[in-house]
Image (cartoon, rainbow, N blue to C red; front, side):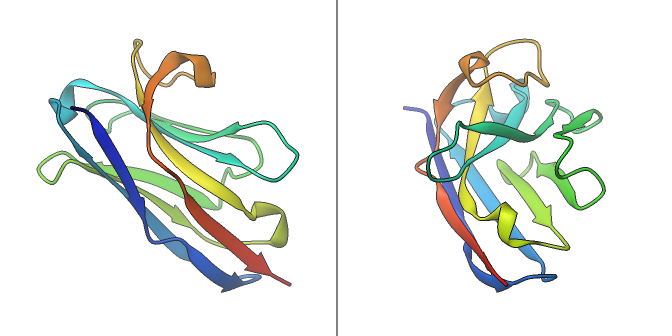
Length: 124
């Protein structure tokens, strides 16, 4: 069965960096684009970044452009999100998800499998 497991979340001070990972299993990883979403309390889930199956194309939400970087290692079935210059507004649960469409989708409805999420908290 398809499983996505996030790791690497935690508490970091404003201005700091964090890298979170998502390990995939149960399917052919390099056949699918992947995405990272986040959800803060009381807010809707929003796209953070997406990456094509090859890693050759990426998408970033406006709020993270220039600060976050998505990458993947198809040999290790893992997708990463490097987060730099973090601020308290980045505090949220971060989820990785598998894109069931053509790739680089921004809507959560285009993703068919989700991880359990990892908490990222940025203190001021």
